[in-house]
Image (cartoon, rainbow, N blue to C red; front, side, top):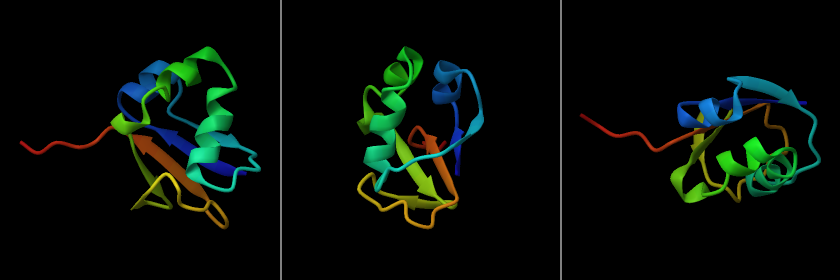
Length: 82
């Protein structure tokens, strides 16, 4: 089981801030495909992954990163300064 956290508009589209998910996904991209297949709200939230960033165990990562040993995956939009 991994914890998946959703921030900003992702949380709004999916409707929850976090969940536990049992996955067989090897990479973040595989996990996203699993989530897209769950329900339409996930498919819409992950429609354009170029508008997303991901952190694995609170460290910025890439979508091709392996999930082996990861306890937490966080999805969020790119941050802007100001």
